[in-house]
Image 1 (cartoon, rainbow over the protein chains, first blue to last red):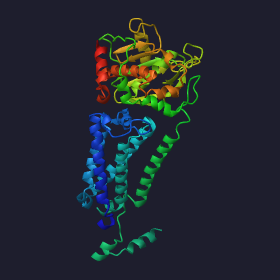
Image 2: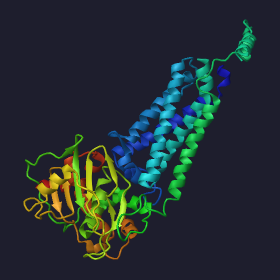
Image 3: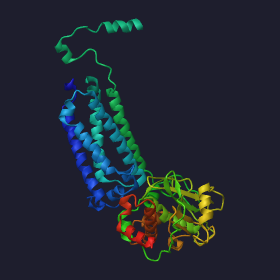
Image 4: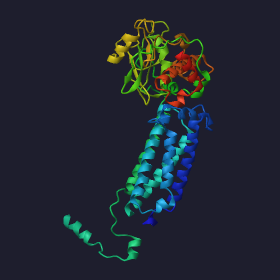
Amino acid sequence: MMDRVPRWASPVSLLLSLTGFAVSTYLTIAHYTTPETLVCATSGTVNCERVTTSAQSMFLGIPVAVLGLAWFAAMTALSTPAAWRSESRLLHLARMLAAIGGIGFALWLVYAELVLIGAICLWCTVAHVMAFGLFVVSVITAPDLLARS
Amino acid sequence: MAKKKRKRRSKVPQQRTNTDEEMRPAVEPRAPWSRRTSSAAIGVVVVAVLVMVLVFATRSPTSPKGSTGSGSTGTPVAAIVKVTSVSPSTLAAIGIPSGLPQIPALPADTPVVESGGKPVVTYIGAEYCPFCAAERWPVVVALSRFGTFSDLGTTTSASNDVYPNTPTPSFHGSSYVSDYLVFSAAETETAQGQPLDTLTAQQQQLFSTYDTKQYTGGNGGIPFTMIGNLYAWAGSSYDPGILKGLSFDEIASQLDDPSTEVARIIDGSANRITAMICLLTGNQPGQVCSAPYIQQEQGKLKG
């Protein structure tokens, strides 16, 4: 059954998770220091500072950057080769549910950027693309992984 | 049909070789998540993103909820977004300008004003009133740092009053969500003087108690703004005349340009309101309230 899970799934998901983790670390540092540290335009449609200092940059009192950091850390752990090889149904289910939750939250953030704030944060967009990639990998592989375990 | 099903099941071999099983199992457990579900899930996400991008790209022609006043003509949503998302660096560059009217603190024994466990910021005005038109701008800029407005409208003040047709946001029909506070607003009349919002019991009580000579220096004057149990004032923080001849979009566009007088006055007033709200929320969120100019203003406000 393992053969039916694409060989690329493990390295690709790990790469996406690590990239997202790196970007989230950068955004978290900017959050706790100053948003001006972000290498990003500060005027017009692309405006990282406007997005990262908006009311939507916090969720239930927690900075969204920190939530992203925690999520990518969890996805990194769930994307290691050992995790992909695992026969544990729970682990594969957890990866898929985390990916769905992650893309759901990313969609809310994209909505906040485009509709509520009216500006786009490039670094946040990189994190959203990584989340989308992880979502795609997780749901594509889910049928075989959940059936086998 | 039942027979047919049983017959099909009976065709499944009872015993298999290892090689057969490795190559292709004849009986796959019914997967809880099929390939079709995967494709549908990805499709839903892609469509959702495309719809949002489309909304973003085509949202300029009309106001989010139309207008309620006399002189408004479909203010672009983009203009309203400019008001609710003034850049923190612009606000920091402006700080607190000199010349803003003094706002004395309410007595220390003023009862707490809360709703659902959160402190309440109250605004009571009317759409015909030009001073209300002026005061809404800094109120919206400040509150947008603590939460999110929805369905914020636009209007103009009465055409037959002083500072006629002053463009402004309107709180009528809008809503506001924040982790830190509740915003309670009412626009009592339209620009033509027709009844609009009815005051809630709490708004009525605050208005009749604090919009008095003892606290605000006026008796029922509008706009009436109250920051929890800390500050209350009647009237606008600046002369509405600075908005004369400007459209809503022109004012909104200048808010992010610290070199303009409009930004200096409106953003500066917003910064002072922000400092007051920070005192109310226990300096939360830190990202907003820890700014040096906010801390400095709080020192002055506390006296």
